[in-house]
Length: 191
Image (tube, rainbow, N blue to C red; front, side, top):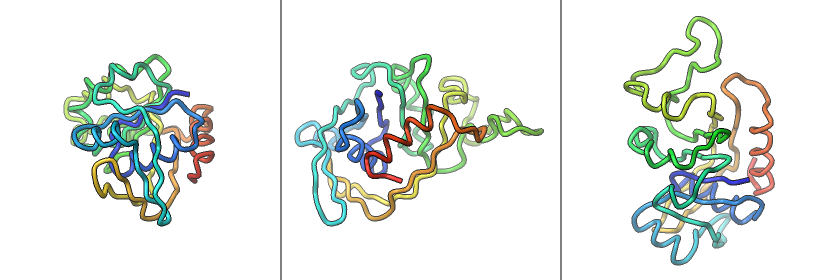
C-alpha cells in the first residue's frame, strides 16, 4: 500500500511518523522548507509519552518524485488546498483515495448525502469548484482528527494527546478502502 501524507506539519507529521515506524506501508511525505531539510537530513523525529523516536520516511518537495499513490492524506490547512492542486495531481491515479484531514467544512460536504442538497457545491470553501473538479468527490474518505500535536522545531513533532482518527465514506457505507486504511492505522498504534 502506497501512502503519501501531503502536509507533514503537526498532524501530518504525527500520522507519518506512526505509520513509518510500524513499517507496514510504503510511506512518503510532502513537506517544504526547513522542515523538509531536517527530515531529509535526520529523519522525522517524534516525541510521544516523553520519549523521542526517529522515523525514516521518504520526503519530497515535488510530487513527481513520488508517483501515483493508493492513498493521499491531505493534512494541510484547508485554505492551502486549492493552491496545491497542481502539486497533488501527480500523486493521483485512477483508484487513488484522498483522505481529508483538514480544518473547517469540507468542499465535498454534500457529496452522497442524499436529499435536496445532494451534490451542492460550497463556493465559500471551493470558489469556482476547482477542488471538486480536480480531485473529485468520489475519491474522498472523510476524517475527523482528534490528536493534538505541535511542530517544536524543523523535523520534530511533539504529540500532546489523543490517538483517534475517525474515517468514513461520505455516503456512510463501510468500504474496503476505508477498512484497509483503518487497519494500517490501528497497526501503527492509532485508534
